[in-house]
Length: 428
Image (cartoon, rainbow, N blue to C red; front, side, top):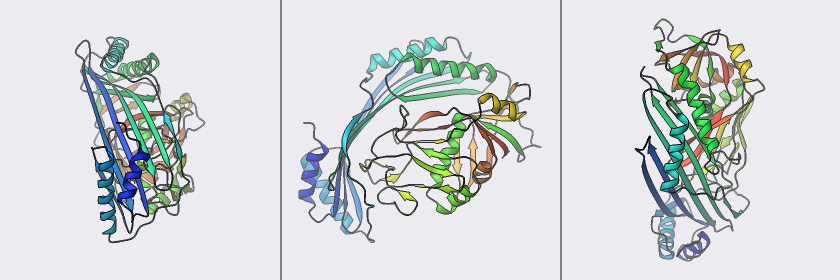
């Protein structure tokens, strides 16, 4: 039978009578992924379901199982209650308004035949773009969360995200990668958008790449970050929200705002409720002179509100949904014209922010852009600079924002931004 979170909560409450707070969460993740090209497609379907019970007595504890039944709910509640009673320190949950309702982001679910059809449509749209090896993938991820709490909340939400990815290995050793993802029906618009963006980059990436002279490594240059690289910058800010000291430093110097918008229409990480059943809302994580922090009911404090919990199955932890640098008022043409000769960074293959606030960003592709618009591909370029310094040197941001998909523990999220013109960044 198909259990509801509310029905399982009743069994959990009877088994854990000393709990001050109890919630039950049912989570299921279903994925259909097709990879390959030109008649050699492979399709993999996977799915998993978990039941999680979280209890608060003295401390806070969780217990999870892949077995979903009233008996499992009772056993998990006893286990969570026992562990919470043994906690060394007392905790409290931030008060929130109760929530109820259900939401489905899309009705169209892909099976094996539909996945292969989308992949072949993508291959056809790409045609002969890229003379080297290429790998195409279409993945549909459906995540359903049903949560009921002892405080009266009961929510049920299913999000379905469609993601298309193209990876090309060009004969000159460079790689081109594009990924797009939306909450919505599978259609030609998504396929055409991926094919068009890939074709644009292949035209310049096919040239013989150069290397940055050792004489210039460690120097500062004007840099343009594309939408995906700007998204990596935004994700670094989201990660920094765990440190109030670092956020004070960023707020004092930043010339841009970074937002997390969990209800952005069609974006890959959008959702109405978080993993504690708390209503989500937009947050300005960083702005010139101010900041706020991602929070859960466990971590909420001054400057941090609940509504950003991830972690099912398990304990909730703060996380972003659709994090991005806020759009500016420049056109893309104005960004290019103002930059003059600059380094263009596309995407991010590696991102690290250390405890001192130093950011290391390895772009997926890098180019030297001449004043006449000519692009020269470069190998092995990395940005290594203080995050607060980078944000203080943002001269302009374009009006358009693009949100790219990513998977975090199998759950879709989004990150992105506008084109960013940064007039001083340290390259190595």
